Length: 404
Ligand code: PLP
Image 1 (cartoon, rainbow, N blue to C red):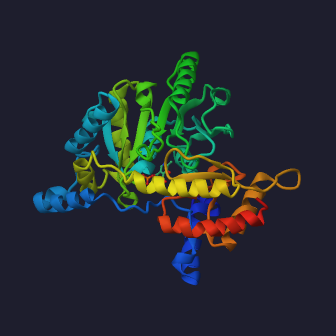
Image 2: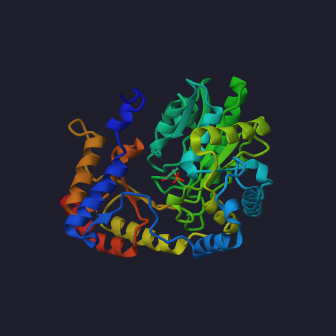
Image 3: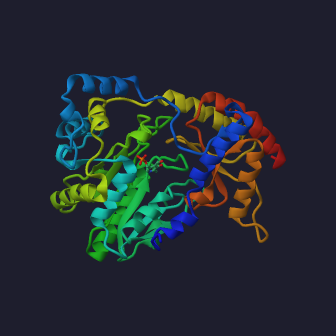
């Protein structure tokens, strides 16, 4: 018999994953080029050539026992040093290898961070709409996720709404910048305001409140937007990073957790996080790809590819009358479901009606409820440009059906 804790997960199996499976079935039925699958954040840009090159060189140059062996639980010192050097150059920080723990992607980095700081019953605040796995991750350590409703005008963080949710039980706060699913980049003003509330509340309650900044999309920004490096604004910050999106390596499972010296009891916290990494069962991040990202610390994502998709989709859809948030980061477009809500129809029902109608045109999009924000849909534009161009006439039919 499976555990009581697992039962709800079985019942609410991720809508995004189910949509992905449905997309594969539809592709078999209608042909892959007739299905417009915008459901999953699986990058359609190949990893930079340098990553493949680095893997080949490592295999040719290094001793096989070393390449495939265990290493320190925090990861290879030279890999962490290369990443630290890159961060210091770009963000003016002063981190060293000892501040970094290599993790099995951001998913594992978040779990390590939460395992390190949470006691049962501790509250963790996050901001809707949010990556729904946060709820599962917090529950893994018997924490309680508390959510702040969105400011639907800007989808930036509202300091007042945030302040209203903090209590003496708040142990940590998770932000995601650039944001999945809205594509919004939290501005420097937003981060400053967030840090001011956190500092005020730490002083009021007399204990630390940790900020966990989840940044797998950090480099994916457009229109000259800048993503503030949060450790510079608030000392008790951990940064979770992943190469899944920035270097198109989601299946390789590689990322890191950064805990700066300014963090409360940083040495003990880093030691605890390193142990958390080990006893979570990951032991250490995968060796070969870890060595490869160490050699590719300065590699860049192909921003031009995403930017072209972003412009085509945003301009195409808003031109048809859909209400969308102009994305500045990540590779998601956040759209209001064009269905009237009211006493007879909830936001979740409205959004579902729209998602189902889109399927008639072979368009797969994710309901906002999958991000705890009903009434919206997420369109992942990390697909080929052709998919977008072929989907636009179908979106036009959908717009017509909803009288736009
Ligand atoms: N955080 C956010 C906001 C994400 O969108 C994702 C993946 O889509 C993750 C974390 C997990 O990333 P990873 O593949 O590195 O585990």
